[in-house]
Image 1 (cartoon, rainbow, N blue to C red):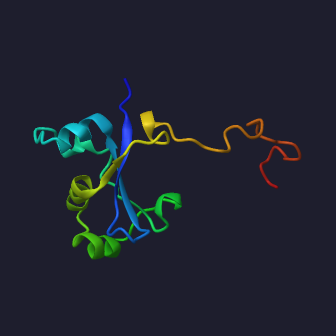
Image 2 (cartoon, rainbow, N blue to C red; image 1 turned 30 degrees about the vertical axis):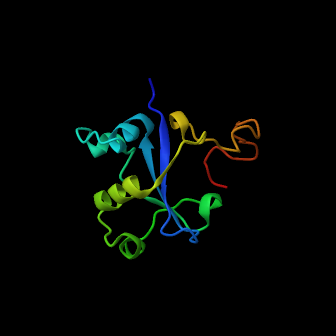
Length: 125
């Protein structure tokens, strides 16, 4: 059975458009949040990578710089940043993260056939 993934979103303040996101295993995160300290953090998070959007939920997620992490969290150490996000962030289950399926808009466009017309066999164009 594939694990169900969701995300935890941390906003530095209510007026900020900055969002810091950690992808988590939904069931393990719920247990961990309820106080089950026997669960290793590595089983709670999908990875220790923190993602950042400067435009709220509509923004593109990217990796924040160490300076951004230091400014917001007081450290750039991944385990400390992830722990703070997990404790103080807002849990959100979304279809885009559910069961590790990420959608792509280009999958249904085109025939997915490689066009080799006009190419010579030597590979020189």
